[in-house]
Length: 517
Image (cartoon, rainbow, N blue to C red; front, side):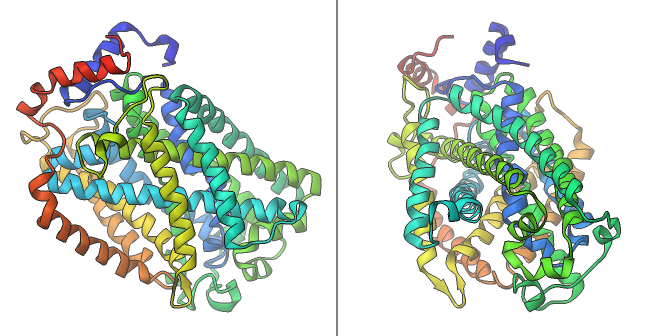
């Protein structure tokens, strides 16, 4: 469905669902079903994580980490998306994960889910844009005489993130058009890169895609410490798992999506499916292009630029680099949208300091402008400050990026696990229009819990063992804050009689932003 096909009946039904959850239609519904898919597809962005983190595979188990590991890792991510799709259809609201965690559990589980998701989103925005900086430096730094310093990085991130925030500030209509374009751009660029790799390949050694190597330690540029072959293959699963995340953006933009109960679950699942398929084609093509796997592994994190310099015509290479850079920029743009909607949703239930300001929607642009600029600023500060602090021989930034994956997937797993037990109870006795049935949902819920255990175990391995201490420390701090303060203060989202009591408040909020019924 396009935005133009959105009827008054559809709008009335979307508003009715939102009012039924106790919220006003303050944000503007300008996103079509494709736009909802495109924003998640843009954040996943196989041209960002798939390229910037490629060494996790090539300097690990080699070709098999792509040929076998990529599909397996994508399946791990997909089980979360499928289970979340079921819940998102029943509760299509901004900040969905927080809302689900509250309704299917209690205000405490909702509050914990919110913080896991919020910190994960802020740090992943920083990580995405830091990755874009590294890519720009490797692709074009020589042309501009750029030297990799913290000062250069921070200035670059301020400009980059500032532009992304400004575009988001100016309305979801503009943002949706750009993320729609991003969806097509990622498809086109992935195909162009794949074709280029296959054309310039010296030969087609398909066997290398299923050949297990062990490039841990110095043989792989010390990307991974020395490990067994099986373990280094499992660690390589972090490449697809890290890349195929961010699809919760479909849920976060529910209140701006037409026919959200239908569009959001489809957007979530299709973004994962197409990213997995096109990512596999692209990365397999790249591995086939590599002239020598041993030499490639030794390049460590520089493997992508090394292989492109070795095999691809300079003009073609620079055109591809520009398309990849633009895709990565739009990936960050979409992530700003997701971060800001999570901040907005949590703040309107008074879950954050300065909640009134953070939940305010600009009546001209119909966007939560304070939330947009706050999330963007925090992401830049995260990269800057964490890059200055060492943790042994590893920068805190590197460790926290590992925590990003853990935090995000914990925020996915909590409501899914709660839904496993809430199904059919008064907490969740009405399903949305996208309904796979109790048996299938519970199967994917159990698989999600198992997958969460795997992600946590892999995420705390060397050189990121500090992620364990950060995660445990976070849980201790949140427990102290919750039981010491927030349990008495924080009421959570409106449930039951509290929804009806918000009728006048909802009407006033919609009038303030010019929403017409």
